[in-house]
Length: 174
Image (cartoon, rainbow, N blue to C red; front, side, top):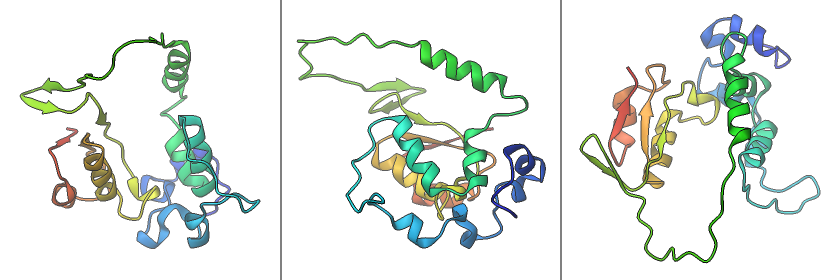
């Protein structure tokens, strides 16, 4: 499959083919060297990303074209995707200064479960495009962040494999 496919061509070519997954070796369509890079083209160490935009820039450099198009696209004519982006751009944070934050408690109780914070990883599919271990790597990351993962019905890995790697409860999208 050519890396010059458009998003539309990739998605219309069939679910498995659209994301370029035929085996673990097809992971992200990038070379080993590209995945190991941690320095810029000038040889200097790149600073850690601080924003979603900076993470997107790093992902764009490291992912195959088909994987990038899959993750950044929306369904059909992408109207809802555009509306979501516009809504986020309208959000404004009101900073509070000189406020005592020595005893902040972000814990929440949801459906009888106490969580360290109200952060859940939304159910998404095709994690093999981002990492060779797919959702198993995602659930490990969620556990490290003390977050709850919601496994997708379209996960690349079985719910049993995901649960085996989990260190906290996992929800399932049904």
